[in-house]
Image 1 (cartoon, rainbow, N blue to C red):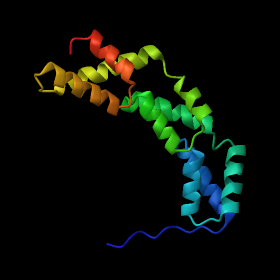
Image 2 (image 1 turned 90 degrees about the horizontal axis):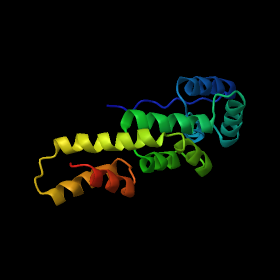
Image 3 (image 1 turned 180 degrees about the vertical axis):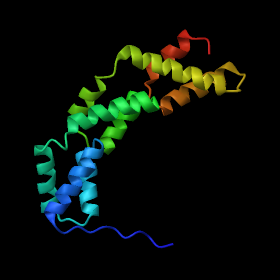
Amino acid sequence: MTAPKSVKITDEKVALAKAEHYCAYQERSQQEVRNKLYEWGLWTAAVENIISQLIEGNFLNEARFAHAYVQGKFRQKNWGKIKIKQGLKLKNVSPALIKKALAGINPDHYMATLHRTIEKKAALLTEKDPYKRRYKLQQYAYSRGYETDLTAEVLKNSEL
């Protein structure tokens, strides 16, 4: 099989129109857009110019992206704050915006989601030894990005 040809765009106006469509489709971080523009074969000056135009046109907004990312990963994938924070760092979102977006998660919903996640995993485990079972549940919660103290609290207060 041959690899698909990468699209090369030389005109900055065409690239801006495509980038606007790319950003309108779903929320994007600046780094995602920057990578896409470089993938299209644009030079650094054109890329930065297009990104500034996208920000001015409100197609690109890091705070809006961070909020949407946090809410989506928490509600859809049941990720914990640690994993969400790491994902945002990989997208080069500023620490202040990460902190602000994570503050938007309701603590009661967060604990309920953690409890529900652990209960679902506990129902699937066949381990009989209580220490091994607890360890496996802890590791699962950690892998989903939940904090160690909250996981320990949920496991201590429930009979899983």
